[in-house]
Amino acid sequence: MSLEDGRISELRATAHPLRLQMLSLLTGAELSAAEVARELGVTQANASYHLRLLHAAGLLEVAGEANVRGGRAKKYRHPWDAERPRGDSPASEEDRLAYARVLADAIPRRYAERERGEGRARTLFTDAELWVDPEAWERVFDLVTEASRLFHASARPPRTEGTVRANLSVAAFRMADPKGGAR
Image 1 (cartoon, rainbow, N blue to C red):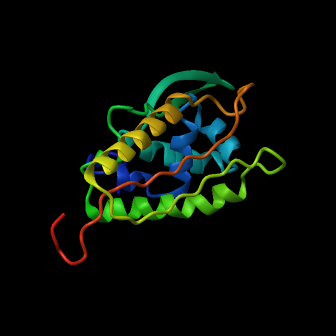
Image 2 (image 1 turned 90 degrees about the vertical axis):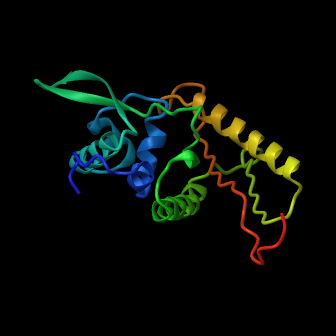
């Protein structure tokens, strides 16, 4: 698929573990491909390729350019939109499922990188497939949305003094009734 193909969906572009990491990294920072490569431990060519895909999909913007050893390097950032949560994308069902798989696959890697030690291991896992009243569902959804917005809005460049590296992975959705009954 060419970078110019305007039909690249946002979710398809993020359905790759490295690109998902890049979006997180660039939420709180403006970085070049070389800086992203160093931060994520990949080659600059690999980082540059994935950054161009994310940019072509409209998920990154060029935040400026910097002089680097006689050349120019683009600085990218992810303009996270608090008014449009990721689930509102008009992507296909196949793209949404691919994104869900990448998100689920990222959790074990991130969990393995968690901070350990007395008083430092604040961890929360919640998995629930429940029947709740619509008001409770709406309130939970609003609270989770608020937490996600706060988390993204608070993002800073990697290793900024006074910050901690943290993870928030959320999937919240209403489920269909398997028997097709009243809801």
